[in-house]
Length: 116
Figure (spheres, rainbow, N blue to C red):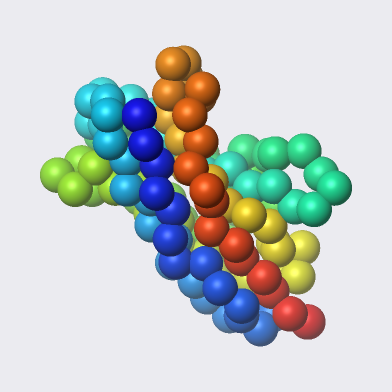
């Protein structure tokens, strides 16, 4: 099982970024996928979830209306479009499935830094 996140960077408040996560080693199209984030000194938190077919999504209250999760099952890739970014969105962002054994494996994450 492997997750490779990309697309992070430094952006000004109000800006946008699109994160990508390429997954391998399991049947990607069979599982719900999630984006998580971890800010310095804080626990990892769930940001967004998408169903296996992409027909259903859920978001943390803090990002609702600003972030959009999507997936391409043909490419084994999940995306996170982040708009209207705020300094409090600064964190390392990770993707993963919603259950074990995939949750035993984590990628390196991608750093998102939002300047005020």
